[in-house]
Amino acid sequence: MRRFLSTSFGSALAGGAVVAAFGWIAIAAGWIKADGDGSAVTVSQPLATPIEADSQEAGGGNVVNQIYRRDGQGVAFISAKRSAPEAQSFGPFSEPEGGGSATATGSGFLIDTEGHIVTNNHVVEEAEEVEVKLGSSDKTYEAEVVGTDPATDVALLQVDAPAGSLHPLSLGDSSKVQVGDPVVAIGNPFGLDRTATAGIVSALQRLITAPNRFTIDHVIQTDAPINHGNSGGPLLDDQGQVIGVNTQIETGGASTGNVGIGFAVPSNTVKDVIAQILRKGHADHAYLGISGQALTNDVAETYNLPTRQGVLVATVTTRSGADDAGLRAGDTEVVVAGETFVLGGDIIVAIDGTSIASVEELRDAIAAHEPGQKVRLTVFRGAKKKSVHVTLGRQPSSPQG
Image (cartoon, rainbow, N blue to C red):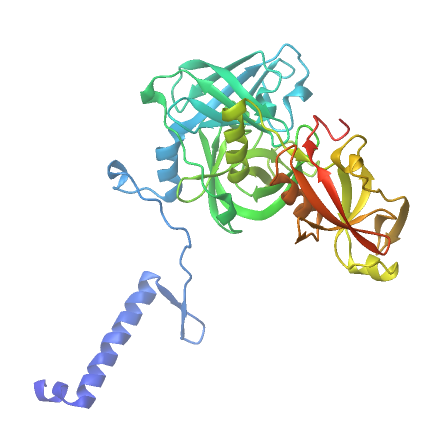
């Protein structure tokens, strides 16, 4: 037998036996599965990468469990009291206590060891008194509202609590988030504190309406179950970093609870707003002062327009930077492929030399500036291309402001 195994044929036969044996073990263990004709098909493995557990957690627990144990203590239960009893004043996603009472509950999370807590603007808007519980503790702390930003539905609170009670969470980079990424939401739906739910990132670049009726861009959509009372709570990635602040749900009018479509303000937006609030007590947003829509090929070809891409200026806000610079609004409504467009006004095709093809690109370009700064718009006015210099204003309290 030893001589037989030492021959080439014998070695090959022995090797084949080992492979065959390993294959049957793999099938039995579930590493691969056999299809109907007996051939093997690889089974996909989970894509989530577990977070690094602390030494005390090294004994086990899945990703959601580890995130909950590590980051749950950094989540806040927020109670905001108002003098007005109307439940509508609490916004779209906080939970009024006692039906029409003047107390709303929401969520938040610590961002540093100085006691700063991020939540939603609509949770604490017009609140006369704000109280906070941290993690699983029943101790209540009075919170100071450091600043709010209705344009992004972000607010910053501060509590004076012992260092041992402060467990800050890390803000991640929301620009790296991809559809399908696993996420965990921790919050206080319907007053049920420190509730954890899990899901995935369902979509990116969603647009939602802020409390002041302006648009919030780059919003993250998730199917992690979130409900009234989750407002202001963290949406965490599989490393336990906050990638968004849960702010709204979509129900389609069929219910008031979760139907698998929730929205979170991206963490990169939150970072910018919080930095401004810490620096000056509020956040400012540059404002051009127009409404418009993206030009399409169909419209450009049908009406023989001088460009195939850009933003059609539909309206110009009185006394805005756009108005002062002489931008012209459209005056003729047309319908192309079932969609209404307003023609006859300027077509914005670039800002500071960078081409613009959509309203979102124009808003992003304006958002990169501060009120008072000047920008150079390249526009088509009729068939003539020209430059218009605009001094950006400060975003008003509402689109009609």
